[in-house]
Length: 135
Image (cartoon, rainbow, N blue to C red):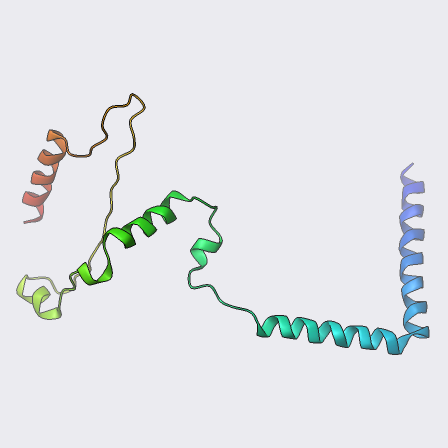
């Protein structure tokens, strides 16, 4: 059975490439024009190619939570509300290098229908402990 399959594949490929060789030898001008038109078509398509501003949104599935949160963060905190620190501020505070970190935390909806909130007494205790640790 394998030998007969090998013969069928061999004969099929041989006839395909044989037909292609006959076509090229008998109609070389038509094949040349076809490839020239194909080249022009690809070139025109490359010229009209546009680059997306953010590759992350293209390669992510639709409705990706991180992308949706990033869009929501842009709506809630526009650029004019962001505070930029200067080098003088960082030197006065004792930091040689500082970077700003923007974090958006959103509580998940509860399945039991209760209100969803991040503001719990334990959370405030943790924030106070973190602030004391930092300062």
